[in-house]
Length: 299
Image 1 (cartoon, one colour):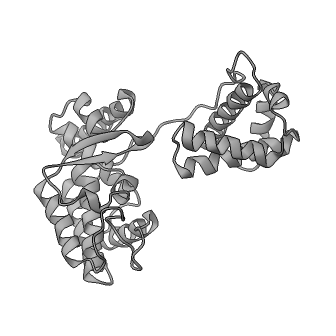
Image 2 (cartoon, helix red, strand yellow; image 1 turned 180 degrees about the vertical axis):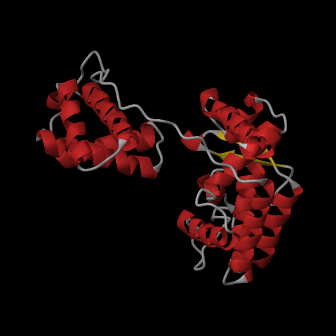
């Protein structure tokens, strides 16, 4: 068994057994590789014998590299998963990884933008584009994020088989889980406008949103276009494509949507992930109160 064999087996398990995203697979393989380099062991049984002290030393070394609490927590999660996998491969009866508590992470609240800012952002990316079809494309993507609550990866993974769009859209989210989301007329019209202007043929098995050379549109291009529009509109740095999904959730909750429905629309596996938006909504109300209450203004 070589180092490469171990990493290949780990990557295959993550991609096929756990259906992790390519980005997660790369990150988890890199974490496992660092551990193998540190302990100098390329054997399942030896890896299965590692304990909490070994993990603690590995995290301490990574701390010296300058990683923060959030990165350290992700690193620990990847290490525990890798060692649990190693124990299974070694035939250990108890596949549980060593117990070690990760660093505390202060969860920041998502920062939504207003409905007007969301619409203006979509219009601005269209106006700033180098070609009309590219502008229509970027506007359509942002409308899907704000109008349907899609993750940017979900929007860019849509294929030609998704159109023509109806009142709903089937989206494949994290872990391959599918959900059905309703589509507003403005979202359907935005996608239709893009398709009418797109120079590339619509094919059922090809990406719906194309790059300038015909390949699948990358997240980086959408993020760059949004950043330029954000600066032009004077919006804060938090006004990113992902912020549009946060805004979708926050505005629905503020309009009376219940948490369970919101969970389904967002594709959250846990209701706890959705509950954070109750705090966002409360924070928004507090800002309104502070800005509008006469006594607060006097202070």
